[in-house]
Structures are given as C-alpha cells and as structure tokens.
Length: 157
Image 1 (tube, rainbow, N blue to C red):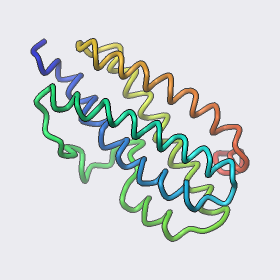
Image 2 (cartoon, one colour; image 1 turned 135 degrees about the vertical axis):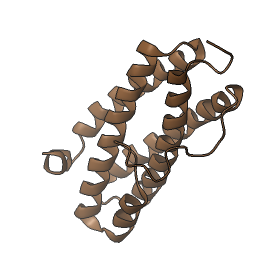
Image 3 (cartoon, rainbow, N blue to C red; image 1 turned 120 degrees about the horizontal axis):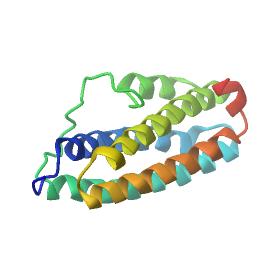
Image 4 (tube, one colour; image 1 turned 45 degrees about the horizontal axis):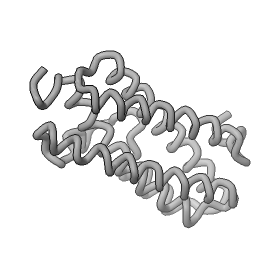
C-alpha cells in the first residue's frame, strides 16, 4: 500500500465523508424540528458526533491526497441522505417529520457501519481502520439508542 493506502481505504474515506456531511444536514433539521423532545436531543448529540468524525475524516482525505469533492454525487448510495430526502424532511411536519427522520437516519447508521466494517476487514491504513472501528462502535450505540426513542417502533416497523 502507498501513502494513499489501498483502493479500499480511499473508497471508504471518500464515501464516509459525504455520508456524514449529508447526515449532518438532516440532523440539523431534526435538532430543530423533531416533535418529540428525546428525538430532538438524540439528533443534537448525533450531529455533534458526526461533525467530530468529519473533523477526523477530512484530514484523512488530505493526507491520502484525495479531493474534497463528493465522488458519489448523483449516485444512489445506500444509506446516503439525498437532496430529495432533505426536501421531504423540510416539507414534513409533526410525527411525519419524526418518522421520516428516524427511518433515514437509521439507514445512514446501518449502512455507514457496514461500509466501515469492510474498511476494518479489507483496508490497509492503520489510521483509517482505527477511525472505521470508532465509527462502527458509535453507529451501534446510536442504533441502540434510536430503537428506544418514542415513535421508533412505529416509524421503523
């Protein structure tokens, strides 16, 4: 592996960065607009965590000599919060907003954990693998917390 790492390392950091950026946009809306106070508090904490992760992902992109652009823009990536998700969230109110938020953020957490597990298994850069392991731990804790939130059972079936 070169200083940039393997293609797996590059693919992981190039996917996780926009995944978190898009999730932060949805979390920002939810921190402000969720009806249920515990959902708002969850969104606020998770946004803070995801922003902290971005503070580790972005320097990794730079160290690996990768562009700061979203190489997946326009692709339907599982777990990626899309522009249409954000538009739907902006249009939704009340319990419908909470349901949409819980469903989309659960997808984000599940898929970003799955992709991060692949980095742990197949990546070569120790720093990337450490960050991926931290992300998996954080995602699993957030998913456990999410399942216990009011409305989660209805939203997530």
